[in-house]
Length: 240
Image (cartoon, rainbow, N blue to C red):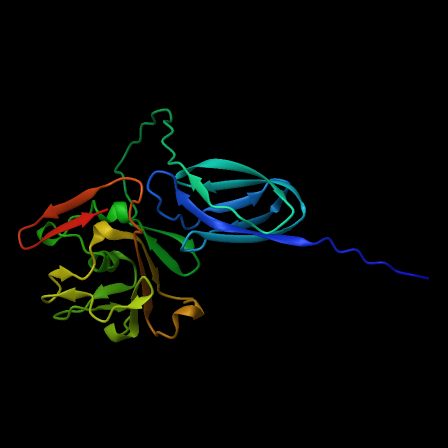
């Protein structure tokens, strides 16, 4: 008696998901297989995705909360590299009247134990001398406080040297200048900021208090752009 086992060969699909208008890589975009909705992957912080499927015809559904949903039909009979581009979602919805004071959250939780700061909301916060500073902004979060007479910050009673600050994976040892008046970071050039106060992922190494993971923009490779500001004690300029 013979027993035959048949295993269908699988192939890998991978690529980058970008913004169609600016070319910025999109982190957190979702790629779902229409024929099998249980198969879903997300792009990492660099906009990269990868999934393996058996040979067949598929429809990939690519979505992101700030972009329009896209469908991509493929015939999978070999390993494929497919880069995807999503257009901004400018859909107008019916006007809704809200009563009461509007509260804009400066952070949201989409990762366990982490706060992801909204760069656009940071721009609306009143700050000293009109200069935005992401390090000062995170002190509005629960459990984080400033150090009196010092430029660092304390997370749940910890010391400033127990915090790890990363800028595109490079450690930052001094996050401000001139006793905290000048920030090391140009907020116009930042893409997102993630604050870990607990359940810190192992790839960041060991820190007792917190991890501040700052990611900078890749830059608009589709159109030329300039932004900046003039302050009382400093000015800034960002060119894409």
